[in-house]
Image (tube, rainbow, N blue to C red; front, side, top):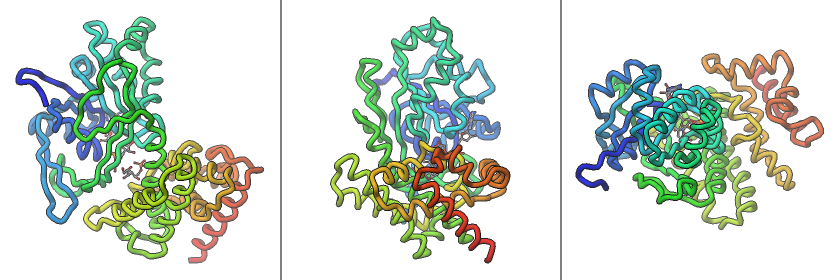
Amino acid sequence: MLGANERRVAVHFGAGNIGRGFIGQMLSRSGFEVVFVARNEEQVALLKQQRQYTVTLASEREEEEIVRNVTAVHIRNAAAVKESIAEADVVTTAVGESALPHIARPLAEGIEFRLANHERPLRIIACENAVKGSSKLRKWVYSHLTEAAKEKAERCVVFPNAIVDRIVPPQIGDDTLGVKVEPFSEWLVEHDHGAGREPLSIAGVQYVRALEPYAERKLYTVNAGHCCAAYLGYLAGYRTIPEAMRDERIRRAVEGVMRETGRLLVHRYNWNEEEHLRYIRKSLQRFANPRINDKVTRVARSPLRKLAASDRLVRPAVQASALGMEIPHLVSLISAALLFDFDQDPEAVRLQSLIRDRGVRDVIRNHMGIHEHHPLHYRLTAHFEKLREGRRER
Ligand SMILES: NC(=O)c1ccc[n+]([C@@H]2O[C@H](COP(=O)([O-])OP(=O)(O)OC[C@H]3O[C@@H](n4cnc5c(N)ncnc54)[C@H](O)[C@@H]3O)[C@@H](O)[C@H]2O)c1
Ligand SMILES: O=P(O)(O)OC[C@@H](O)[C@@H](O)[C@H](O)[C@H](O)CO
């Protein structure tokens, strides 16, 4: 992909599961030197020392790929972070949506340093499960830039939105850097008109003019369905997603949720119904992959984020309800999410304390944005109470 002496640098924030298991792998495959900006000291030391790690597919043949030409800097090593950003052709992130404000300052300092030296084009792509993640990151980064730097950044820095899709579970075993991933992957990036140049060539990336339909397809199908396996699986006492998917009652509920959001998507975007059903079936197969030891508590993590008005559960429910569509499975799923009380998840602890102190109606109104007069408000409250009662009786 590159000329003999050409050096291309990619800086990736967050050396976690998807960072190493997909983004880093694709960037390295494309000929970039990949600099992970990480906060785990051990990981930073190992990446610097080994300069490579292994990605293994969760498939019958367990194919392995060595991801080479990688290194790392610690997020607190401000000088090294700035220098890496100054050299980069692309910056990507996979730190979790709620961590984006925390990486905005080091990123802004790197951009200021870079712009003082040159104005080569830079793409910054947030690879998070977030609606318009790169645009949100841009806002936070800009809040740290001087007026002069903002003006320059307008000319040469773009923040195209993106979606990434690959199930990468928490890693087990002794290999601190190695990652096991599902074979499926998809990485879609908004065509970055802003820089007025050809989009950057990255293995596995498809550029699209309008991202929103794809973003909604992923969030409302893969992520909403996944959540259903997780929250119902948690209440039923399962440890992993494939275990939950082997329970026929849960599998049917997962499919039911995806069919409800599917009706909405097919209606909104005038899609071919059969094609969308294939996407649903593929998602069901992916969740059930017995070689992916994905924990129910990982997929259910951060319930306040997942229950926010703009996220995978409430948004399709409100949109479908406005169109008069029946959504019993989504109602059950949202009610089950409200019962997620895993004590090692800080958002689950916070959610339960909000419900205890202010009541579930307050959470539905103030956190989820569904007011008392909305037909969903009563249905959710009633279903939540029924589930809670059933749980107490067990
Ligand atoms: N794992 C998946 O299957 C998957 C798939 C698609 C998208 N995503 C999205 O990717 C993002 C990351 O998910 P993950 O599963 O890889 O989580 P993860 O916890 O494995 O990785 C996140 C990494 O970010 C690091 N991090 C957090 N704050 C940081 C900071 N301030 N500075 C530097 N590093 C920081 C953490 O130390 C961790 O290594 C999330 O937004 C998630 O929704 C995950
Ligand atoms: O990462 P979250 O917490 O937004 O969602 C949990 C999982 O559904 C998610 O990580 C999927 O594995 C991933 O989005 C598949 O591409």
